[in-house]
Length: 451
Ligand code: ADP
Image (tube, rainbow, N blue to C red; front, top):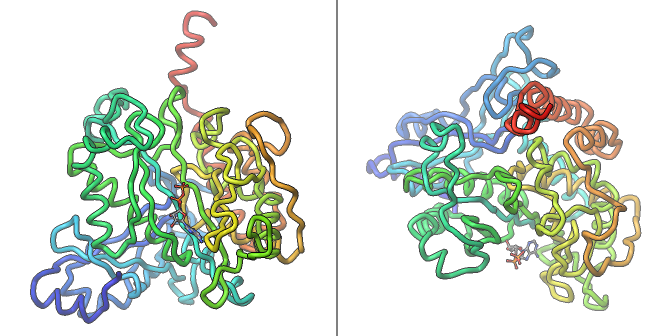
């Protein structure tokens, strides 16, 4: 549960809380913001604070690339308003005396929501669903690797000292995951005490790979849960002397990390994707929504795989999909029907990597689903068998292709607005430009003598 503002006032007065992290999720899905003294926050700081507007036009390394319409050196990199959403106030039990709040990002002058801020993008799609009478109930899974050594030690080794915390594939293993409990137990418990409904953690299908599952919730809460959980996983791993990595593919011989997105629409508190008369329990609404996901998957792939590395994950026989098809409880397809024939019937998108920004990944899939409903699309029969066999309906193979599909997407231009699509297409281009300039280990090893 979140806490009320009055509870924060009481805990501040008693000295139990002295720090409030005032944060927002950036384009990369990280928490950025400031650490407030709790006394100042409850005295008036809760109203609003400010941040430099380059923070929503930067890359992983906080560069200031040109080419964004929203801000630039020429425009002087002014301020945005960070407006705390007091409904997100919660304790951060893994940090002493600390609470946190998430902010919406507003224009400094008009106080309108900044359209390319991740929470604004999701809100816009949720408002469209609300107008249709629906609520999106979503869950995102978090897969990641734990490493034996700390971030600092690994960085000092030039990212070569990458020894996973375990020595074998630990998929569903209890023996090995017991040895990781000094990290995973505080992750589950601290997040639970922060009001995040943790379901479970489990070993995943690679050495040192873990998965954390959080109970499905209204989509905005799911975005917040994912973002805070990812942050906590890094914080707690670091405190234990380990590194946790959400890089989707850290080694070509290892399985990658994904972030599957489970989706269902509800109406008046009941699952609108369920029809007990249907063979698989799928309502007509669900079929059209899924048909929209399939039709527009190339358009939105960028938001499920936003970096050069993200595309290295899509390899045959690794549980990461390669094709845009759907199937019933089949982990080789891009879209998997889960909970068939029950009220929990839902679609799981398996395309996204562990580097997704959850707000963006959910927003663009809701937009595609709405398009499917509005266009009255028909869902093709489910695929069965090994989806890795076959060459049709491939997921865009690299960031360049995904960016082109994004730029050319009339559906996303209509749903998100032109300036938002152009903003993120520029973000993709920045990644491509940066990578194009770098000489990699691969090129040197391949060509140093042999070229
Ligand atoms: P998996 O085998 O992929 O791990 P799980 O049964 O553990 O699947 O469920 C994965 C996620 O699906 C969980 O986070 C769960 O809360 C979520 N989920 C369950 N029911 C629904 C639903 N109706 N809509 C969206 N997500 C749901």
